[in-house]
Image 1 (cartoon, one colour):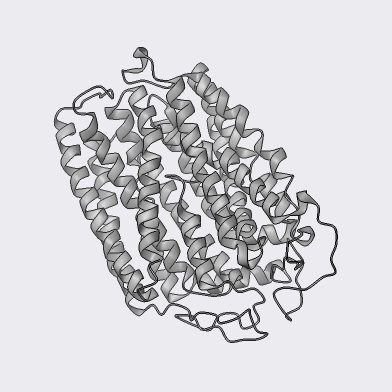
Image 2 (cartoon, rainbow, N blue to C red):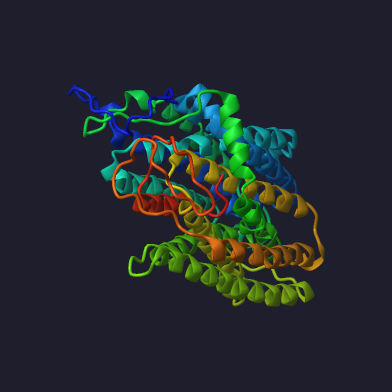
Length: 486
């Protein structure tokens, strides 16, 4: 990452130089987008099948518990690591674990090999954490201030394209009459995914170091970093122990805790029905993301009002989704089905998964927007999002562990999810009630300007500040594009 710079201004004018196409912000937006498309995008496509496409969910759930446990740690500490080794190498290391994970699923699917699934889970956990540490900094910090929205949209469409294309591949390889019954997907599915994901690492090396990026307006990319690793850890600890962050920990866990949806697919759907669900469910999450983002971007309402309405909208979505889920689950506990997409009961069961994903994505968008309105300081915003993503990952790790065994009728994981969501509602409301969105920055950052936060004054010596509209775009783009992004 760029070395620490002086506190004079966020942008430094330089003499005109010949621009190289591979140093431009547009090229680098395509690099980070392509890596997101190939690596985590295709990972999401596999897991959208339920249990990574396996016949039984237990080994894959154990592997994913490892993935998200390590990912949670790496998300929190990834930013200090990236500051030390640079964004290019961080992004490169953030890709190498994905094909190993896919190769493990291939060997298990075809030959019953177990060890590589677990090794792949460990490498994928480390890689995914580093990937998340670097992609946000590139997507938000590289573009010219006036073009951030455009480049964030490029990043967004690449990220959402991965699960869609991956889902289409899975559906194309698993739609025959032989795939009507319960079972596992074709091993050729994993071969295609493994081959594609190996391309991500060399693509990541095409990323330009931030100090060499050539913006169209001639300004240089400046990323504020603490001068020492100890300073990074101290800043991280101060952010982690804030009262509002501690109150948000339950909802951070609850947001992505429901991993029983993968078990639900393997229990009640045939292979090709799971492939269809894995492909089409992405459209539901995109719609949910768009609806919540439209609400949160509605300029006629003050930011605080949007956050309050968004909170109650997310609550309503979860009540509908979980009441419906409980009703259908009790029905299937008494008489377990095995649906193909041609069967009459398919739509009824499919809506359980669709509603769960719809509610979860709406909550996810809302959470990132809430966090994004807590500070104007991009360094602190990175720590906020790292803590949020890290705690979500810890919750997913526990949830995958919970679903490594077959609970009768799914009642235990459903009960844990319902209770956790209920317990998270009140402390989250306390944060919303007392939250004062950061004041809009009128101009570019001023040296040593005081930045008003909802809890405390944030980093008076910050050198990089993002405008409120850019934070809203970040909050929206950060959360769209897949069910359990890794």
